[in-house]
Image 1 (cartoon, helix red, strand yellow):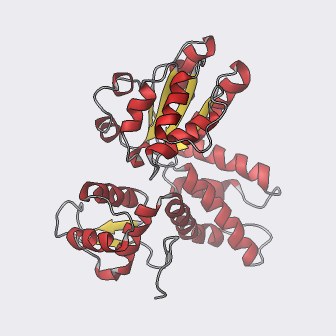
Image 2: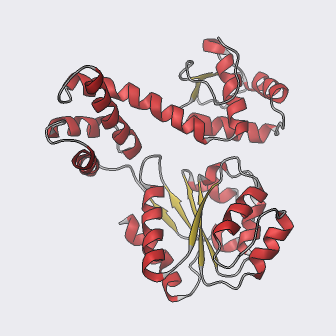
Length: 324
């Protein structure tokens, strides 16, 4: 259904008209990015509609414009250009519809780039995020097309749908009989509709079975796979974040099991960052780290007295850290 909804929003681009900018909203692992990429690749192959996907997390205005210009079919030269030059190149490009996926929109730190993109003819933005109200609130008032754009909502996969996804993975990557239907359903029940968690759990179960010398996955392998999968996902998510997130995470992790209060976190972050941001930015970093399951807190974390700690104190950020 979401594929049809998004296809309907983007349909004008297949006839040479700009599509309305839109939102793709839902929880992690619900297929937002994979579905969007599948559809956009179809539009490119079948109708020649160009598109680009950029990661918002930690990216500067210049980095986003540079990556967009690199994929724009009418921008021939962009290397070595500054922000103003990139904008001029994009503004001057005589283009048919061009679709821009702003992935991980929650991590956008430079909302002014939305004004830049809104001013470019025939550009449509597809903004992928988790929290609709929070995302729309961050959009400048002048960017009406996006603020008022339609929303395609993704929900967690049902257990039945999750089993189909896992079965397809098993059929493609495993020999027959390595994992049985009951085990796939056990994984689907556990992962609560998250395809990312489900696929990683299946992978972990197979790896554990191989390490233990099993010719097929056992129920014990499945039971042990979930924590392995969570650890791998945490590592991947942390690696996907920018340097500023890593500094905040490192400060929280170094505080140990006692945790750290927001005021102390801000102070230590400013001491350790080579380009420290303000309090609101640090709150945003903290919120995303929690959403990714990398940190946790007392209560809802809204009080200045609530302490924050790392969920897995063995997981280091990909920065130089002291050996503990």
